[in-house]
Length: 288
Image (cartoon, rainbow, N blue to C red; front, side, top):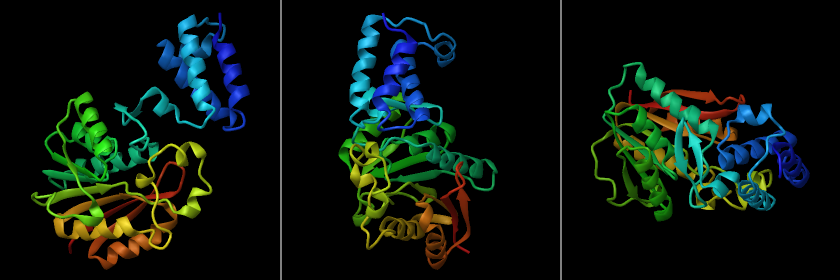
């Protein structure tokens, strides 16, 4: 019968060409805890712990798929974001820790009491992780979310039900809006739009470029700010005075986005670094 130690050795041997040791150990731990239901503390403390044959077979199957570069979140079908469970599949991006920081920034900004929030809009919602996390923590706000993908919205709706929140999901393309959004003005508009250029793609891991949805990732090389421009224009028409616009951004465009938002009549623009010290978030206030 296989032990935790055996599984760890197999992961290190078979995934060394794809990931560094820390990533491999993290993947192994995720697989072990998910399949066995055993805590990470116990797994770390007891490397000789035996694994049931059926569970070992499931872990072997996970390893086979990991060797192709497939993200473990897609293999398992779920992940965690801001302390909440989310279903994920190849129709949606896998939520990242940096986006959790963006959600925390929104909640802390509202928590100051300086802005009464009735309506929030999430543009390009994907799995719904931003919209659902905000609704879970700002329970009195009405939260709406749009996406261009029907499949993504179906996943987001499942996640809203999973987390017992009510979010208004709307099928719409921010680059070609018609009359999909008939709504009072918003106090907060937030977006983590596509911002990866084809040049950036060359530096990215295959488990992102080969498996995650390209429509949620990539932008034209000749117009890398296309979504930010469209969302800023939309926000200028649909934000209340002193309403807040939040973006997750490509770190290389921080200065350009500050200039763009300044030009479009936003003020008090703040560029914030993520946990890794990179410029990854912007907050701006609409109106003078």
